[in-house]
Length: 299
Ligand SMILES: [Zn+2]
Ligand SMILES: [Zn+2]
Image (cartoon, rainbow, N blue to C red):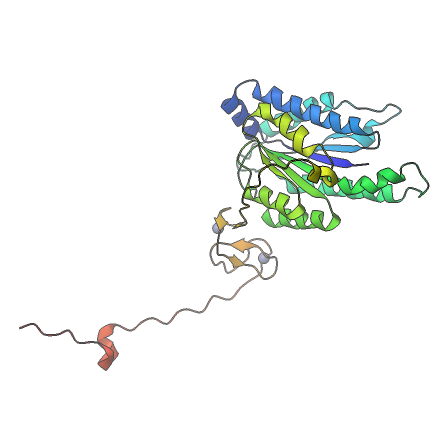
């Protein structure tokens, strides 16, 4: 039994940019690839679990497909209708959001996905030891998350996401990332921390090949296949004030928020900090007495 959580970018701007950059066939191609991949995962074993989530500017509509709730007397192995309908609803909802500065929020969707995987793991461990599913239970370590991203922007939830990545690593869930643009440094770090893969797909028609070749096989079997070339991971953190990658920064001692410049009050936890000590001002060279060098007189 292996459960997979697929988290799909639901930003209207991202989908629009895909259409503009790659033509009208880009969006149907992406949806076809996602449907083929998720159906393939469900078809590999009747015990496999699947949860498809979308992350957009509003998290009220997250769940696109849940293999547990779909089984009501009939086993559903086709996600096509749910994926098309779910993505359409998320994009339509994003169009109606009036706040133009709102960003897609990945952290709630990822937290939801990790809770789902934890539930699947707990349920599989609770099965009786003489059950037929015992051999499949061992495969629950293959539970994983796949994030399909389309923008390289740095998401604003740096500390929340880092906490979730370390939680995923602690529980043994790997986070794979497939980026249809340059992957965000934060998502590169997610794959690196959790032992997942971070793939960059330059065209939508290469998405299915990347998913089926590298992501579909369980994590325990990946060493048997050729792995994609690994790039360098940008481990710089983003400041909370400007959302900019920084090499050196001020860090709040209470909530670990990162600030590129000194702030007397932390924006996140409202902790108050004393002003840093001021450097003593240099005296002018004329007032330094005998220490000032005299210029040689020219004749
Ligand atoms: Zn800043
Ligand atoms: Zn703070």
